[in-house]
Amino acid sequence: MIGEAVGGAMMTVVMFNGQGCEFAGMGQQLDHNSLMFKETLDQAQAVLPYDLRAYLFGTRSLVEQPAYLQPALVAYELALYRASRVQADAFIGLSLGEYAALCAAGMLSLEAVLQVTLIRGQAMAEAARQTPGQMLAVQLRATQHLPALPDGVWLANRNAPDQVVVGGVQKQLAAYTAALKEAGIRHMPLAVVGAFHTPLMQAAQPALNQVLQRVAWQAPVQPVLSTTTQQPFAPATVVETLTQQLTHTTALSDVVHQLAVGGATDFIEVSPKPMLAKLVKRQLPDVTTYTLGEQAL
Image (cartoon, rainbow, N blue to C red; front, side, top):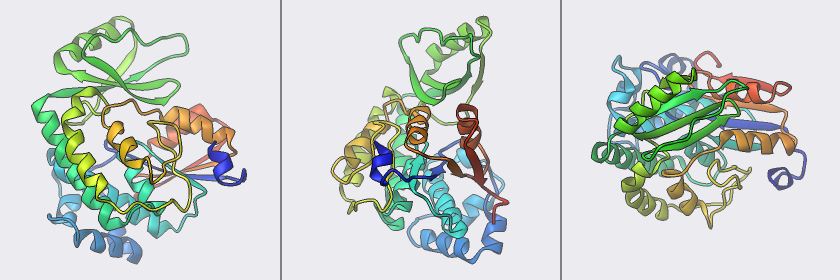
């Protein structure tokens, strides 16, 4: 249990968000107002082969350049986390956010996490070009149940007891969308370039696995709980877990429940805009939630 990993006295969980929380221009004011934020972006720029600030602070949708998005979002969130000086007892992340969480916990360096997510972003963008897919957020009321998933559509994310994300082949997902509409179930397409956390991402796994194996993994200073396996990350298994994460369901709601059972009372989200904190609050009304975002510093 994660509570045992911190001696049964865990209180504060820091959560890093994944793709879908980004927007053009994010971080520009933070870069002007926070020396630590600026220094972290400077360190990231020394690693990345593109102009990080021009990409983040421009006016184009960040999704238009998916190969740039992943390391840019990780750099932004780690810069925000470092500048906030928040102390965490444990970390979690949603999808890409797990990479920021692993870096914050000391399992890999800033340079390594940016190199890995650069390759990950490129590999996933290429996989999406080879096998186009889409994702759909589904909101369920207490009396509603998710209709059976047809071939070519998979459960990608369990974000909260009342919210899941499905992904799949465009034609099959369009038919499933019609079924949701007929059942009166609220749903919304996500602004992503592929069907993440489904078998459609298999083509991205070899390149990701190769770069993950080159990382000098360290034991975490604080535990990081995987949303794929619902177990703490460890140097011996992290490569397998992150490779598996590309094609398997992530279960944020399950790890949030596990953390609450382990004693967590405060959940702090690191994200350009609030998303995870709202999901946690809906699941656990009695815990304290907060988002470190654009106006946090």
